[in-house]
Image (cartoon, rainbow, N blue to C red; front, side, top):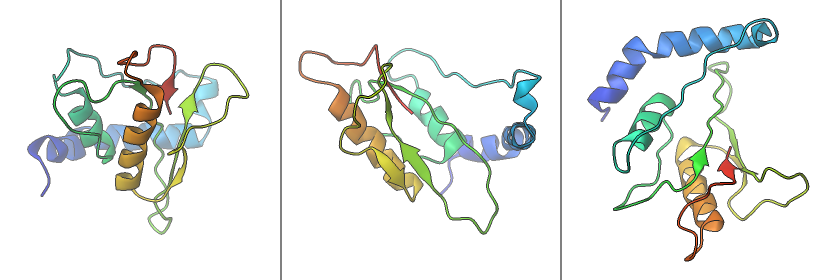
Length: 137
């Protein structure tokens, strides 16, 4: 069942996201800066829910601090006949560092959601409760 937020996003926001995707496909970002969406807020204020509604990717759920790392979603529209695909990886900020378990190609939004959770777990430890230097892309 689709949430009210998700339905509203599809109705009001999705056409603009599709327009931006179309502009990117013809290389417009070389001449004009394309806007990006940044979601910020207090702990448990619904940031992951907003990203989930925009992307269709289920984000980790739980009590307390769940999404501990900056997460960047780069979305592109594809032909309707094309299979859904994604690549999950860690942006270490330094070249040459290997990827943790959970990184790689994903074939469904649910699989990407699980990868976000796995990569978050790989980047955080008992001593470090969130990632300040690295992000999940």
